[in-house]
Image 1 (cartoon, one colour):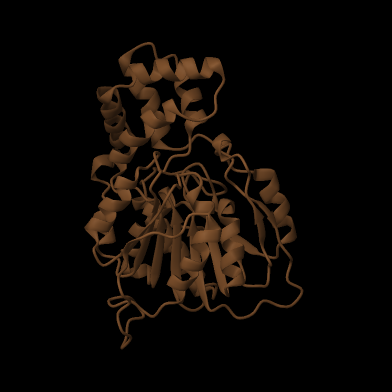
Image 2 (image 1 turned 180 degrees about the vertical axis):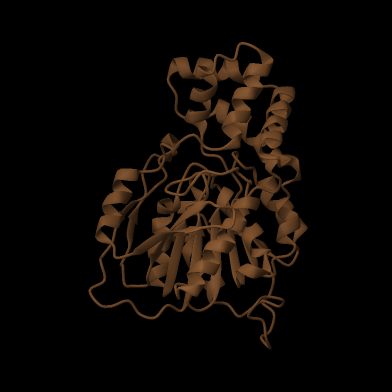
Length: 367
């Protein structure tokens, strides 16, 4: 959910938190809204890629008054070649992308996929998915969630308020003719929770959802994630010492206080942000989680699967929170097959089609 190991340590270290209230208040401030973009996002490489690609973009001002940035990429023969770093222990999990710019006009889309990114990322981070889904015939629309990228700032909702923004953006783009064919949603981490909340709103009129490594309850995810972030990740000797000291001070009471403070500021109790309850209202969802995920442990994925027995749930062995979203070699064929499937019972396109068999606990092969 929250890719902020280095930013979190820097935030707390620079905050002068010699007291218990100071530590909880500093952490609460970081939980309220991201204070930058993740250093894991290769902005220069992505800017160079987008400079070559034909696309359309703009902003929609939502009913909450938030200007939300969107970018559409049409289907085409991009011939994507993705190369992953050999050493993923450094946290550099974003592939090097090579692709062709189609020389012929884009074919008519077979459907539209809305792409939703993770915390401290932006819609550009899902370019590999946009190109791969474009090769499969889908138009993609990547959205910068509120407080991220080129969108405006507003109270975070841990997926709830962001979902309302997504519904408004899609409604505006549907009126402009940008939404063609069945509408699907793919989200990563924070964006996966947003995708589920958005799809639970019948106004979105989403047919199928893919949620990669979503949290089940926001407060629980924060309690799971923060101690892990202070124990792991590349760091100098001094940074490791600082993290150990912070971990020693960051006990359950401090975490609870920070979560309560952040929730009070947002007017949103974070322990009440229940993705499973929303998922129960989504008729056609594919959940994917890595069994080595320690940022948002696999228990969250399993809890979501238990909350929605009708959903399809897959675990990828050996994959963690940072690496899983970029495993297009394993996941893209599964996701495309999922989007190509018949309408699910209870979905906006459901008719006389037969129900899609539910697959639970199926594991894609490891790379």
